[in-house]
View (spheres, rainbow, N blue to C red):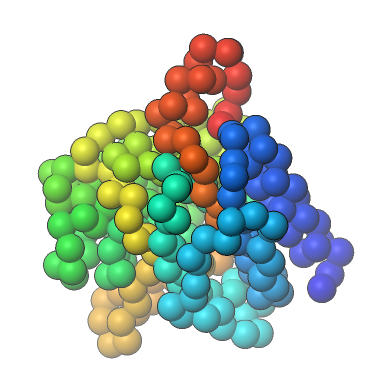
Amino acid sequence: MTRASTSFFLVLYALASVSIVLAGGPSAAYCVDLTTGMKSVLPGNTADVRWTKKPTSNAGRCRLQGVLKIKPPSWAKSVSFHMAFEKSNKWSFNIGDSPTNDAWGGDMLSTLYDAEIHSINKYLRVYRSDVGGSGLLTKSYAVKTAMLIRLSKNQLYVTNYEGYSYYKVHNGLFAFDTMYMGLNRVIRRLSGSPVANRKGRGLCSVCIYFLKDTVRSLHDVLLTTGGGGM
């Protein structure tokens, strides 16, 4: 592993550890280094995070691709995604409620609960589920060097630590049941279809962890105390 890739991973690892403590834990953090494919789990209550598509090999720096299936433990009220980027290009990540989310909103009619978030180059796009009326909820030029996305049932918080933050409560947001995450690709890529080439590069590492508090409760505490990002 190169010194640069090690630093990406250690920074995300440290951020996840500190955030778990500050936000009240308990949790385990499942971390993936997409410069090497290395995976680690911080000590704690291990969550159900597993590969549905294992990372490709020899894809180049910050270009490894894979898909994770994420099932919150029964005690969890929110899930956080800490990501580090290096020149995000096209679809560097895609987080969705549906196993057939493939960017630009909606899925292959797998479920009405198909909210999703994805990058497209430097832009962040958030889409409502069919339950919440579908369609684009927000679009922002926000994907830079790092990003935190925190989700609860119908609640969302995003920050890039560089001045951008977004907080929303909406019935079209995530159902907070089983979720999926495409790493340097969309969740569903079907060979021979228009979505076959929906992949990207630039996501270098991600740490996923769960918390016992909702996004709204954490946000309210920060407003009361005058704190910064969650």
